[in-house]
Image (cartoon, rainbow, N blue to C red; front, side, top):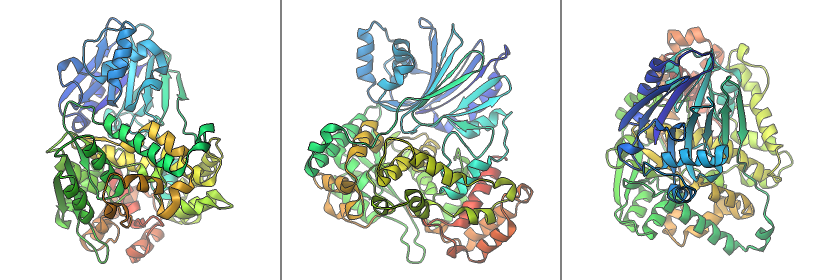
Length: 590
């Protein structure tokens, strides 16, 4: 797990190694173990390394293979790299390192752009060809690893984080109205290629881009998620589906043990992370290090899930760490948490992951985490109503959107408002082939879009802020493909994730399976009061906020008049949402 960046020029000028150095410096937390910078002809690249696989200097990046005339910068982990290495060795390739980075390089030499089809894991990488001047970048199927880019005069720059591109300069930092609409409507989810800034884009998941020597860019999608059943699926019973899911998850968890350092687990106390612990124990892992975080309660809303994480820790005899965060520590940490965000993230549990990751990084370098199970196995409350509905788009928007377009028009400056971009996006996505039923349309959107730009991005940003690699077994693409084909009634029954819950009974205690659904609650950021409310007032009264004029004063005043009454359908604070965006802009010097 690392941070990559670079500049490729098309105007016969030398790339700016100084700009690349600035980008690399911003990403020190993503890769605290080593740094590298390489420049040749029209290409300059930088890298920060977190040593997980092949800890030797042979795996240092940027990695250049002079015999092949290829170079690479890579962020991620390829779990099937030993098998690929053997296959490539038999094809005649010779290796100078023992890690996964060189395997990608040799795979590109062997299969060209189709190399991505052979990779099992999470990845973002850029490869350049010395002799042709062509470059190739790609991102994993579920967008677990980020890849941002900016087209500037005569060049393209790229990086693992948006703030790195800001540090390089020459970026158009105007607010993108489409991204703003998504942020305020689509629960702060801004789908690729957009970011909140006009001048910075992100490569979509399951996408690769070829950059020709003249600067022409050619993108293609190399993987799509199909929810339509295969012919053999009709022969499977409910018990068969349970076993198929459990076997696939076993494989996924085992794959994510590939490392030359110990692997821990972020244990929330919910089904998903508990199942990961159980499967690791089943495979013979002993004294697994597990980590949970909790916060102070506010009113009737409890701030921790320790009751359930304790059950799992005791049952599997893990080396368990409980981190309790009181309000005195929460507020002073917010600025650094927001600084670690590549994009503004409104979910309350971002700060939870940030503070949890700080503690975890003192014990291990790699953790498995339960993100993705709710989207992949239909664990959210809005899925059952999608089983039978006449208007899937309207039903989805009713439960997921933070506010209707009419309210958005009251909330933000009219110069940023035109079309109902978020509703149009859902309409277009639902209309695509590969998901015929309404429930599957929602599951596909959440798995390939919402999941990428909310929970997954949150985990990447907050863990990497402390040099911690997070692996997500529920987002193994083969498991995701299998789950898409599970009949939806087996997923939504009894509150959702039914097939997963029933399969889990073979592994973990029933008390964790049958508990009420929970999440990482941070009540102080939902019900703003006291010093938190004063903090928000200070953000929105700053001179920069007044100059920016993003929000209409009357709307802001209405939120301040009764903060606890303006809660989104997904239980978020509308006031914190607008304050977080402004705070993110200020924190990043915008």
